[in-house]
Image (cartoon, rainbow, N blue to C red; front, side, top):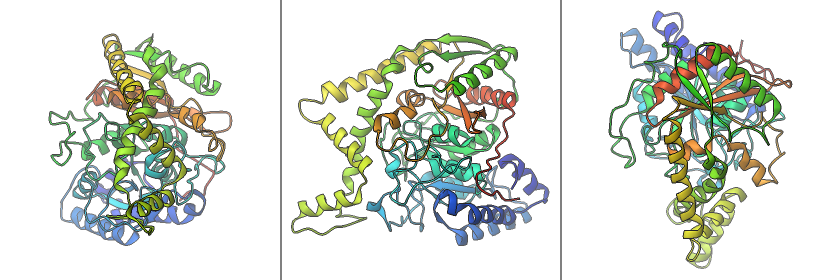
Length: 486
């Protein structure tokens, strides 16, 4: 398998490889690793081979559709894909085959990408370990006894293992960046509204954002340049300019100022994670970057606010799954009984927990005390970010307070699971871009991620710094827990 998207693109355009060869390599890797990883829910080998053949014919005719032309891609299974089962990891959508493509899928097809299949996820993207899927958990390619993170763990594991060069995930409260950190790949959440949510099965509509998993920072920028842009089908889509994400990759970072968030360290952060973060900050300082500590007090209550806002929106979004219109139907003697039985059997325990929490926080007498107060915290977080960006160009932190944890270790402790996303949630609440870059391994050989956050539409600056982080880390994606394609 090529080293990444940019490398594969050069080989494709020089005639040294073909889209069909890249695909067969990806499918071969999947065939030998899926029994251990379970990264995919569906592999569409027939559709992928047709797309690869079209890409090869295009290149032969001198047609170049862009940086993702001929590239094997894995899609999180909450993005509607025409003619391919799309379940959101839930029994309630088992057998659902969308009649249309999500906008992001349409853009991939127009860009000549080759869609390998649909990846596993926590049910309706609710989780931090990909253990909540109705179709079984995904495991980490670096250590099969550990989780890949979540909720986009399937896409992260597929890219780390080499069964795709690009994976798409959705990030509501860290669901791209946290699994990227745990699987040792690059994971990026764009500015809210820059990648269309049309056709994304909603969890929390004011927070959800689609973004890429890749093997390099350059690949991430190339992927974003294809999938983002205004979409009239999404009422929250950004209608202004979209700067070229790749434009600042080679500029270097001499003279920039980086702010280390003091609230995203200390208790609960593993020593190896803090040591790797400190080492990277020292390297950046030697490269000419000013490094300062920045306090953002509202971050200490971001987790609490998130777990009121996100469940409240989920309780509304998931009301459509009632057994009447589509998906699972469990018969009952009355309409009310049919709905109740369908939802009780179709939803898993974590989804039910969040629906109940969200419904309670929106109920009469509690709305202002819970949901309303959480929105005020959200405004305070946005204000803290704005003040910080008056002093620094980007903010940084560990991506996750820990490396990948043992499968089953947190399933009985929801709070411990929720704390996995403590570094990621503020960027979702503010709607800002953020990226995780792998910077090293702990003593057990597990990856550690470094997060770079930027102001709204600050993707160029974010990638500029992330590229230097990647250069300083010189990290090699080489998981050894599963047999890799040679």
